[in-house]
Structure formats: structure tokens, C-alpha cells
Image 1 (cartoon, rainbow, N blue to C red):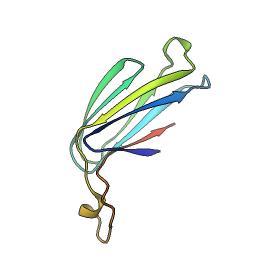
Image 2 (tube, helix red, strand yellow):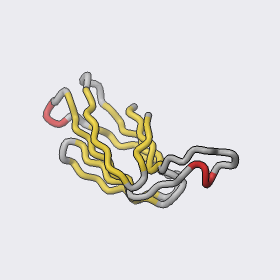
Image 3 (cartoon, rainbow, N blue to C red):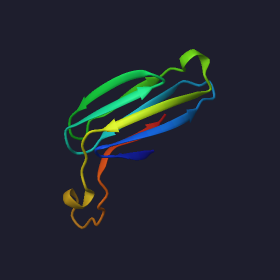
Image 4 (spheres, helix red, strand yellow):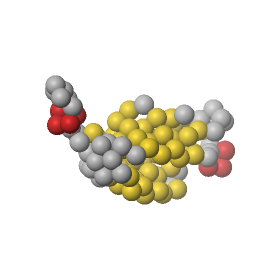
Length: 98
């Protein structure tokens, strides 16, 4: 998996082998709005701190690739919430393909 930066947008292309995919989303430890667009299907998730969701990703028309756009409205710096952390990245939400 990987982080989407807080207050930022990311685009990625996912190659599909034909097996169904699920997009796992874990929110940062702050309230957040995460917008996800998969091949033009738009979802806006209002998430509580640390909330997790699983979103099925059906292949559109049997395509072998999917274009995914993700926007995380807010984020946090691990150094501000974890004692001893020096991590200054501004992280919004964690994504995994399952």
C-alpha cells in the first residue's frame, strides 16, 4: 500500500488480470473527505479519524487497466501525534489493493 498526501490529488493506473479487486482505504487520524474516481465512477467518502473502508473495483467493460484518481482533503504529520517521531510528511489516507 501507499499514502496519498493530505490536501493533494494522486492519479494511478491499475493493471487488471481479470480477478476482482478491492480498494482498501484507511483514513488519517483526523476527519477527512476522500474522493475516489475509478474509470469515471465518482465516490466521495466522509471519513472519521482512522476510519477504514473497502470499495469493490469492478472492471469497466472488461478493460485490462483502470484509471484511479484519489483526493484527500486533509491530513496529519506523524511527528505531531506520535511521541519521538521525526516524520514530517503530511499524510491523508492509506490505500491498498486487495
